[in-house]
Length: 338
Length: 88
Image (cartoon, rainbow over all chains, first blue to last red; front, side, top):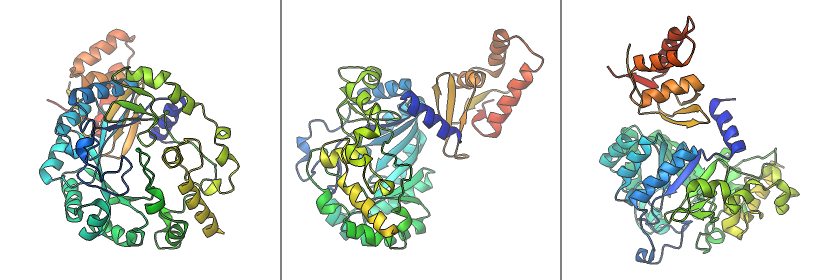
């Protein structure tokens, strides 16, 4: 067992949040149809708080370090919009975090990539939504393809470790091969993200943009099937939520994971340590057993399922429910295997 | 004795008295230090001179024949992995 695997296993047993996510803004320069935050067709001026206050972010980082968080994922909205991003990263680096920024890349100039690396960012996750400007315009509400490609190059030049997330949905899944070719030509790591969930504001996207069973079957029979042929022979149903994972949003609300927005406490009212250890919701999640996931425990496709509790929550309103999207994918995998 | 600083490319956290080091850039590896190793590493991060760290350890632990050699061997290993960098 590697050192990291051993430490993650220990952290899981001891409820230590090794992996943290800090949402420093909900503001964004794109209007993606699938955005999980909220329906962005409205005016951003309606946002109650655009950016996390820098002093609040620093205090939160100190509390995360004290709790034992090592990995820090800085996200948004679009985090590069935060006016004090470099100051926040510099503070995080002084607290010895491994810092990763998740971005659409549109603002990542060579100069900013250099500043981010110098301040302490070591990894950058750049989302790729299509293969040309037209696809960006249709899906993201504005062009951005060329800027995204430039961002990937800029990050690589400045020694940032780059991962490209290929965002796959109903309208672009046939372009996966082209997206992979782009990454291969750039010489950059990539992964496929095929989870389209309903939004935190409860508005729906999965039924219109999520991959259908037929789409998924096509992908399973295509040249890149290895991205989709997930198997779960051990019938695992739980992730690291509330055990090794913690999420904090722009308002200082603490969640078991940024992808599972269950309110566990407000950092303006209580310390992170108190919320993490004493929150009723955190402890409820920690104490869940497979028997609590009634839909899943006797499911005939569980061995093919890549269920995420956060997605189940967003898609059904119930953290312990069957996620209909995961079920669709699992059924396609089972049929494909047979 | 040579003095050191922590390589800025790595990340680390003290967990239950032991330091976990994440090295995503140099060797794509993780390292776990024992209690004494964690003390030395933390002291380096605080800017302490190697000779002072050695003196503190000698004062704390009964001086065995190999204590100084063990400290130097540990520092050499950290240096070899580029987790620490000479600062003078």
